[in-house]
Amino acid sequence: LTNFIYNFVYNNFIDIAREKYGVCTIQKCLLEGDEMAQKQIINLIIENLDCVIKNDFGNYLIQYIFTKMKDINFELILPLITKIEENLLDFCKNKYSASVLEKCFERGDEKISQHFLTYLLEKHSNDIIHIAANKYGFFVIKKSFFVNNVEINKKIISIIKNDINKLNFNSKEKKLVYSLLKEFSEFLC
Image 1 (cartoon, rainbow, N blue to C red):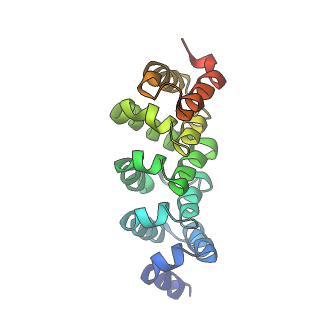
Image 2: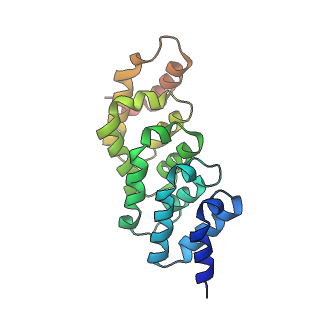
């Protein structure tokens, strides 16, 4: 009896995902739908990732997947995680997509959070200082310390400490990063 709702969502996905109440509808479809419906919605998110994650309402859809859907199959959302990782640096520096990552680190599944951080350390360790110096990226890095993995936290803070001289001498970005070092000094070796 609900197939017409799902068909409407599939056919009008991007318009619905960009609306305040439309996001709520898609979230409900994810919650109530079977694995096939969930997979189809996640595929639509992946196809339209940039439009969804950088949208003031659409980003809540991805936050919902990472923070509220604790019982969702990790393998089902792994393609979404991988797609986000492809543009992780850009997403860390954008207002709405950065909030997705913040919420993931703050309240999301540990497995997903550690996956993002491991990728960041392996592929973009030289860019962590520039993420931390960005007004949105700063909060992504700050919230990454909510992830319960001391080794990852130590690596991140060590990289920041070692790379802080890459920033301009008396810049506001450097002062911002120093505040991060001070706040999480317990992870310094």
